[in-house]
Image (cartoon, rainbow, N blue to C red):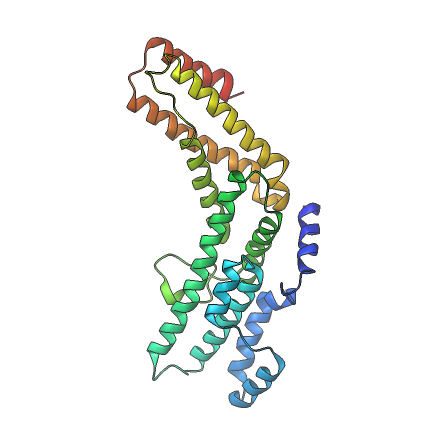
Length: 278
């Protein structure tokens, strides 16, 4: 946890990233909405606010930030767009033009979807790359923590919510877990299976390849990846469970697709009990 907090502190020193952590507090968001709602002169207050803050980025500019993996800065700007739109909606600005609200809401949802895709990509790459992208990992962990802090008391968004999901929690920790499972599943299924025609010991060779691949990946998780996440992510356990699920499906597929000899059955059972479980 100390290591994670240290990485957070370092990241906050980077230019353009989270100009103020208080900006992302839930009370800040609620206070901003309340201030707009209670204002006796919304137009004058809006002009004052505009003078105090920088020109907001466009949807295309925010999309460019996401493409560059400047996720924290992108998220900050998405939240600005989202909160402004919610305030305008509550002030009945779009009562006569609901289509304009729908278009803006869809733009924000598309930006959130783009961030979700990048989260999946980062998780996928962590085991694929020979060296870690430390900046991407650190930003990812802070991004998820920040989003959870903002929406600690709001309902979670579902895939069918659409524009109505504005202001809802984004479930990025669940997305992270899902991405871990998909990444591990792909790595297990990519371990080559020798042809029976090439060697009669094809299954033993494949099981040894599985052992090596899984061991190396878990060592990488334990020695390098887990330090970039808070302890409550249980990173090692999450990856262990993911490998267990993926391996179970993989071995079941081997049993269904091949007629094993008695010696091959023995090799498989021996590997499960004396190699894998150990």
